[in-house]
Image 1 (cartoon, rainbow, N blue to C red):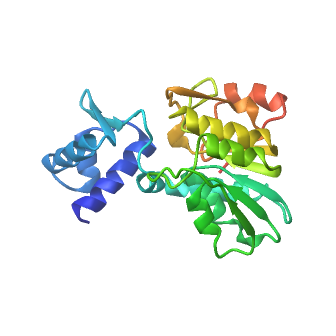
Image 2 (tube, rainbow, N blue to C red):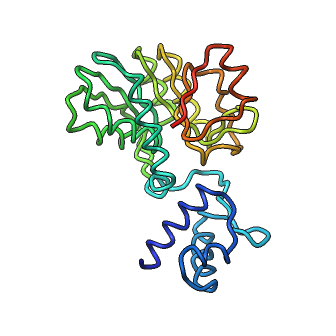
Image 3 (cartoon, rainbow, N blue to C red):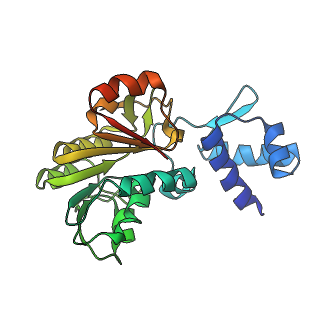
Length: 251
């Protein structure tokens, strides 16, 4: 593989497994430690990873990384989550889809249903649905070019105008107590409006978001009717929430 492919795989690995030493990465990719250190310098210089105490770590940035870069991180886990999320939808429903790469994976699997109406502020999801037998309504407003989505007040007003049977969203992070986080207020605003007008609220959350605190609070697991992950949540999170009617699915 060339250095571009290796760096993409290195980035995916670090986000999936957490901190890694240069020596361990060199053995995994069968290259010299000097080559891996050059890869790490490049990724760190672009704000994609963090170097600390002899390890390379996911970068806890003020802004999320580029959509295309996130899309390759833990892709198999996101696909398994999407397959479970698909099972919560039925023919003839109105479905809200929020932003993010895991939600895009859900959109790719909705072609099996009849007469769906899907409303979204996620252009990646809308593009995935273009050739599916469903009606798609896309939020208008100022486009966030990096992610190809619409957030903030434009998305808030869009979701305020509709009611959905199911709303599916993701978030930027979750801490050990089940509190949820995101990168900025505009993302939180759009999600709150979506969830407020969905009868069934579904959170899709891959394991790279676990134990991640960001600067904006975005609710908690108890806000959802169903939480779908690719790695089982700890019992101390699941048990009290299950008693309150939150359903958990693990892919």
